[in-house]
Image (cartoon, rainbow, N blue to C red; front, top):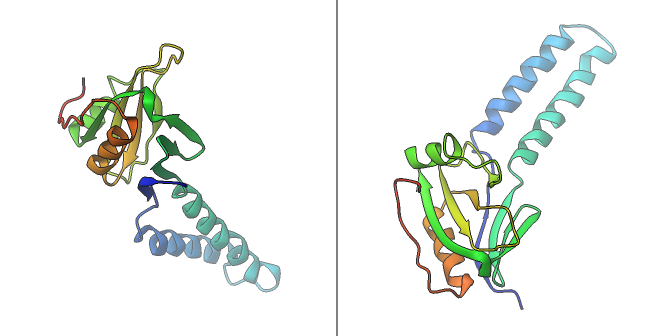
Length: 162
């Protein structure tokens, strides 16, 4: 029996769809340029489905906590290895993903998602020091991770990364 504590998909914002499809239509119209025959319809058949596929692909990542594991797209992490879970946003997220980012960190970042969770790992066999995962509900994700880890850890709320 699967017990899910958190589940979200990191889809692109809805307003991106009409904007991207409008730009794709403009590109197809530019290629069409009033020409008859194949150039009249082929650009639309190629460009608009391609734009739709790219938007779907960009927003396909699913983040969920179930059965004492964190699943992020194709990766998964047993929660027993998580020592801290810290929601980060704003300047703290920028710093965590910028100057303080370790080359060994596991990062799933979506720029259109404002929040993230930084998970510090406690696994001597794994060279990955921490994970940074984008989330629209970082406090809920961090709480679900700590609850599922079974450790005595608590969620730290911080505007600074350490």
